[in-house]
Length: 194
Image 1: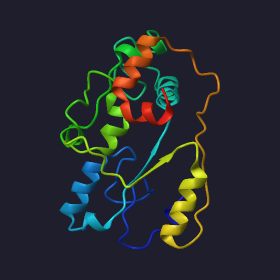
Image 2: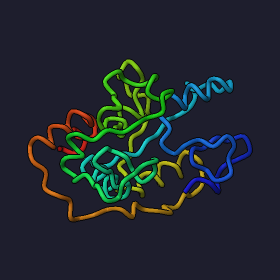
Image 3: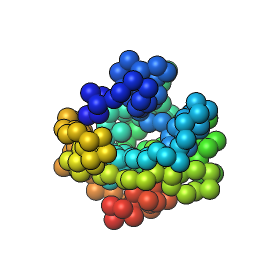
Image 4: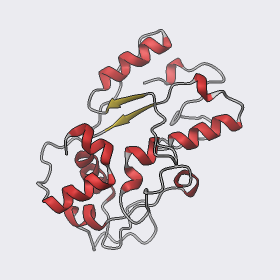
């Protein structure tokens, strides 16, 4: 979406060929630290993030990365395709790692013992729990993000991709699962009325 509009010296996350490579799920606090270390004045920058309904996001993550009963994923060593973990059990008991340097800069309640590393707070809040992003866009409204970027950059940014993992057949979750989601994803749950 934004790659064609970058000028020499610009820094963008998840841009092909950029060195050093910045992971697309980098956290805001870590990105701010990274930029400060390179003498960028982060007070002059705007930070943006996209969010997604936490149930939809978890369903997509579960379908794509297929956790096994030991919470190993298709991207980890030892993943066992023959021992899948069902979705609702994963929501209640699943866990996920996060880079140590990202975890250290985020809220203390983010834990590798549950799925909170996928939360908005894990990605966009500092250790004080305060969000450090200036603009939050819903993933399902890419047109709004494209319009915002067009205004900021001063040239039309077209909406290139939409999320292809959207599934209208979300599973019905019980109260326990929904409560787990609300505790691990408080802002998204509030934002989407979970």
